[in-house]
Length: 437
Ligand SMILES: [Zn+2]
Image 1 (spheres, rainbow, N blue to C red):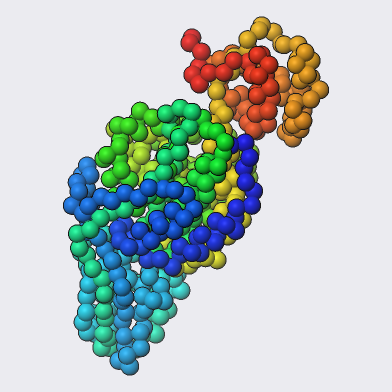
Image 2: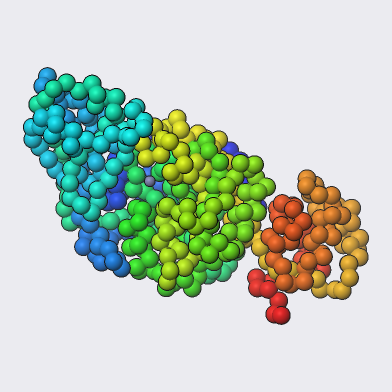
């Protein structure tokens, strides 16, 4: 995991463009099609959970599929057309066919309260209803009725699908990475997340070695995570040491991190350290800014130390959950920035240890050839002396590497080559746990 790829942006954007047109929901063909395309990139396993399966307080709903939907005016023109945007239908609408007056149509149409040119994204998974969504500007231009409306959908017992990939490491301890595959045609929320996750998985698979095992999940939001936890919570509690909910990772806004519920987990310290040295605009937010499946991972009794790292976080950009969150909103360079940030965080988690000096006082470094060269590495934030003394001063087995880097305001990655040489030279011992008091 030493090399972080720097030019994946356009590959990620291409995958995103390929997935964009598919009408996804929490169940149905769109989810399966999405997982199949991702499977072309990484060898994930797909799972099926039958409708009616109980998961804690929830039940997996009937499967929803849709073929077409429209509203036609008196002249037979489609004034609302599912083929133009799959956001035009309330997601999970039951089938409908009938004639409506303008007043009746108004009661079934959702528009955006502020953005007249945006089709809002509306769902009704658990209350059976039907409806349409459209631009307010288009609604204002509708003539008088009557209108013919049709929603050609099905709601029948089927399955909920999700994708899973386990990448083994040197230990059974795990890092969990999850994203969502239930949103229809919107780019940042949510295709950027599953796309970035796919490329992180590819990078992890291609890395020659990993300390931790990685559990990577492509889930429908909420019900998917609850379903997964209802089967695996105990195992996850034993094995997961850190993780991220990967959502909204492709927008122009700042990198934003929502901390785990207790706010003091290793993942919180690592992510804060990385973002502080990475993006001047970054935001660190407490758990009350949660919104995606970090809610489930962190819930009391589950208590997994999982944060959420976004770039243009949900609810913090006007285009959120509308048709304006489109392919122009997400750019290759934004996806690459998120990839870099995530990769640096995972690397920092992998490299974090408690180091202990194996001889008292400063070692005679020239014996190891360390005094004038540190493996050809040129630190950018500190000269070599500063770097060496900073590290050595706190290698007492009680401070982990992130803490030492924080104390000296030096990027943790500047220490990696030095640490490797000192461990190799028998000057430092490493432990994943702090030394006993
Ligand atoms: Zn969303």
